[in-house]
Image (spheres, one colour):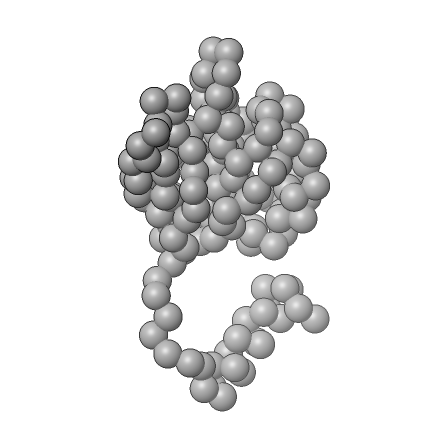
Length: 161
């Protein structure tokens, strides 16, 4: 078996968070999308790539632009039993716990607003996600000003109290 490593950049509208994940089965996860993202103010698009049967990309959401972008990303990745969710109007922490408890979700590779590259292995059978590159390389160690900024932003975003 020979592996071909492919890096695919996920495309997303500005001010959007992307989730990239692997799951054990799909149709149930598509149905779980609206219950995981229950706030009417949060806009989302979810695309799931089937790995058996018709091998279609299934979509769900409440924002046409985000649904289309999630579907385009899913086709670009072409990895079975994976899904992409794009959200606007919320931070990853707002839905991450609910997403983790969906029984079909095996792994969440990223929940980020950063630029994201997905590393893919390809064999004769198909493709799979090996991991992600999330954001940029660190440039140094934070100073006191950085610590203060970090603590303030975490509280502003309600990540910490």
